[in-house]
Image 1: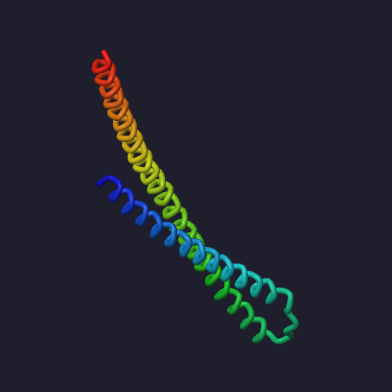
Image 2 (image 1 turned 180 degrees about the horizontal axis):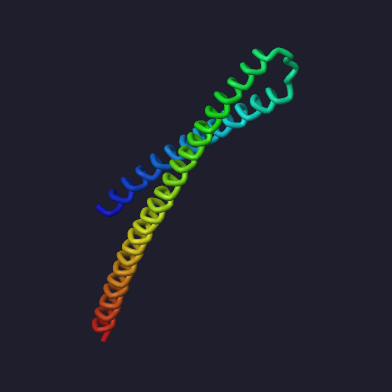
Length: 136
């Protein structure tokens, strides 16, 4: 029964690890988006060849919008990293729990094996004693 429970917990751990992998991938994608946005904003600073005031105003407005978007993306990155960290901690806790159950199952199997060995030894001793008594 405990072995079945261990198997259920192992399945749960595998699902949690899959979710952690997905969150890790999402976090990486969000980080890449932020980097691309920052590169675009930096490229805008380097390409200021506008000579009209309207063009400069548009550029300034665009940079404001992109900086706000960058701030939102930073928050998205932070959130995805936080989700990934929480999932990682949950996986570690589940892994520890599952390994604890493994230890209990293994110990019980060892104790059962030892008891069986003791019983077999006792039966052999009795058979030897009976054989010795018959020889007399």
